[in-house]
Image (cartoon, rainbow, N blue to C red; front, side, top):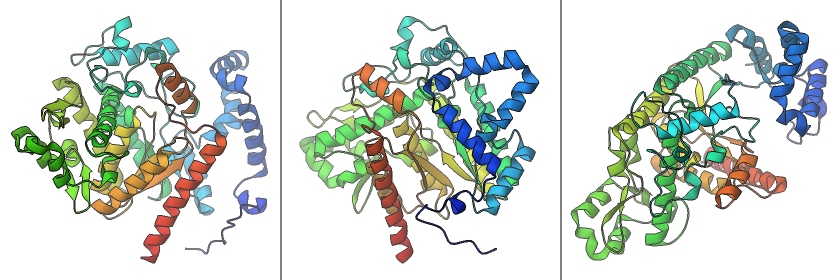
Length: 457
């Protein structure tokens, strides 16, 4: 390969920083970002674009957009049109991440209707009209039993997940057939990445495009309730594996209840190694086999020894939807693996993220044994991101797979703050931009120090 120029790690040389850009591109970027800094324009962009299209006509409208916003943020409309941009970036040592970004043009009312409708389905193929009650009571993800966590339940005011989000795609669940179409679109995108980047590129995937989002909501609550359970029986906070508790520790906690058949069966399914418990539940089996989720996500009560559910009873249809989601994700990753394209699983809202990260880490464990194939995404505007990164790095080390990640500041901060305030749970975000920057740097330094340690080792 041709020699590369030395990197300017000070970032103080504008000539090096912008040598891959034409003067016209820099002028366009300056104008576009100046316009994007005007809140009124951002908040009313749909209305402004519709008015502009009405005034100048479709053809001139498209020319204006391609010369400004579209040209700034979109590489091209198809495989052939993105190739010049990708080739030019590669000539300067920059790899590409392709993101399938087609979204439906839904009104807020229609988006809320679809989301609430998805919550109230009880039989395959049924799309009932939403009722006022269906936003708070659902067959999936909103049975409010003892120990429920507010954050992981449905709030009608935030049913439109695009609320205060301007920089991230949003997929609304229609039915399983629509998820199949999204999977096919991702598969075509993998081919586009492979052909355009010569297998050096990456592709972003959103898990909410591949299945019913409310399943992620409910699974996220299970994960967080399992953490609370570990705190209850053994003290400490955080992810289960950070406690470094052993099976023997659990047997002592349960005392005379440890010999009960259901408690012994629970002990058998725990994932552990010589450093302690990794997971309370057999996640590899959950993702690989047709296990009944309602029966699997149960823990013994330390006082009575009776088993209690961490997940509400879900129907056979919902079990099938969960399996379909995993099948689609596996299909996408396997297709990417065959042509050596990396997959980045996008981060989403905090009420989905525990499930998304858990599934992504299991996909890493499966596919990242010999190379970096599956990447997780971490949003550093969240207070707990550093702890999550450290925990996931430990899991990768203990289970012997390559950990891969994209670190970003985040895309949902206004929605996260508004939702936390409205629903009465702790704001998960950093208090200001300076705290977010400090979080980002802390995470980045931790990752780079691990990389340096591995290289020395």
